[in-house]
Amino acid sequence: MTLVVVTIVVASTILINFLRKEEIKRVDILVSALKFQQEVTPSLEVQELILKIYSSNNTIPMIVLDRDDRPMVHKNIPKEIENDPVQITLLAKKMAKSYPPIEIKIPDGNNQFVYYDNSRLLNDLRYSPFLLGFFILCYFLFSFWFLRTIKKTDEGYLWAGLAKETAHQIGTPLSSMIGWMEIMKLDNPDSEGVYEMEKDIERLRTISERFSKIGSVPELNDMNFNETIVENYNYLKTRISKKINFSLHLPTYTILVPHNKILMSWVIENLVKNAVDAMKGEGILDMSVFERNKNILIEVKDSGSGMTKQQARNAFKPGYSTKKRGWGLGLSLARRVIHEYHKGDIKISQTEVGKGSTFRITIKKA
Image (cartoon, rainbow, N blue to C red):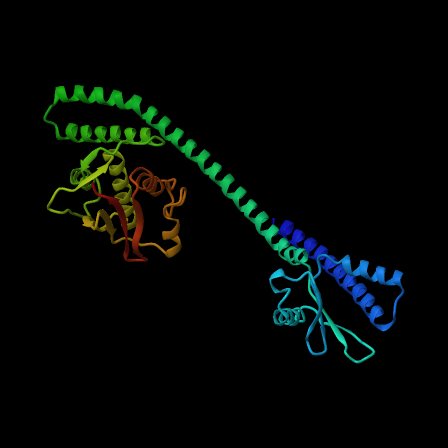
């Protein structure tokens, strides 16, 4: 792409320089005719030829001044200054910055000076290579963006299809497990093990529903945000290491936020599990919910290994992971749930290597 743009700019520059030299040759011919007219008394035929040479110039601006800088003749200059000698003289001096004036020696000593400049067309063409290169560059950038967008869309459809197929595959053994659980409850209805297994099966059902919702627009109809957070906290607290001091801080009043409970719980679970992995099963994990302006903020803070700036920048990219196991999709899907479905924001608000990280979710309240 760069080679194409450079080639076009160089070729256009060569063409413009050629046209510029041709215009200078035309000026030289015209000046020679004027000199001849001043030095000798030409015949009628020669005068007609000189007049034709002078009349043929319809593009190149020219001004002839005497030795006292008074305008003698002018052509192809702006109409608004044609009758203003002062402005004509100023324009001639401006032309001298581009090309030195050509002196015509007169026998009586009142020499004349011819000032000229590029034609308007040539001046416009001087910028055309860069303008053309700019448009070509924009075209290639747009093509690159378009192809990348299509690729991302295809990848999105692929992941959505994989997620839905996973949900479908989980559904069959899950239904069987629910049936066996009912049989076990009949034999021993008060068993704590049966009760905990029932909660895990219910969790599997929730996970299956999460995957089935990927790629479709979920309904945001669960208003009591406190309830969603507490349910996730209670479930996760019993299933993480006892060496982790897990705490929750909620406002004393009810928070009303339009959200999808299943997907929001998925986001919270991903953040908590990432925090647990970062602490290697031991440390302090603090989850806080508070209100700021018209937004509700959820922060998950850990005392884990923290991240470098580069790791923090890449944390939400699909496939990126600092762990040896896993596909690196958890935070990417969490971001999609918050950004696309809840129109909110999720980011790493603070992180320091060796001191932990803080993830923050921001969503609008009802």
